Length: 171
Image (cartoon, rainbow, N blue to C red; front, side, top):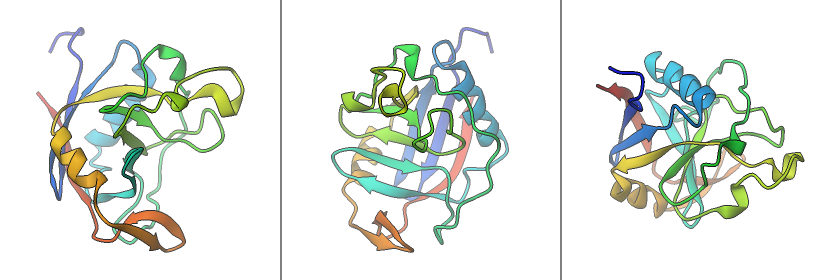
């Protein structure tokens, strides 16, 4: 595999397969981080724990019982890389702390310009896009309309679990 090729990851979910092409050039830290979790099988058995139809679907950090999985260290936020939070792009989830992303990611279901970098302060820094759905956007659209509710103190949780069965690098 040559250096210029952007890695591709297939997320096999309980609702179908989502193929994500990663942007190694613009988001090297996020891509390396995501691929490390994929290689370790970390995402296998995690769920999409937060689904907001006209916003995004988020996963990669909790098991089916909504218990957080142990993560590695937080990474540098690459939101200044020029990639925008548009429908179908994949970005790192984080807390209010700019450089707090670990394993969780989200897929934008609509254009979310307010998530793009617009300044240096934490509330304007933005969320780092590191890839794009290049197959299975129809699956993302199935996930985005599932019925959600409150569970274990969390809101926007799918009533019926949407699992990530496996995440694999596609050669």
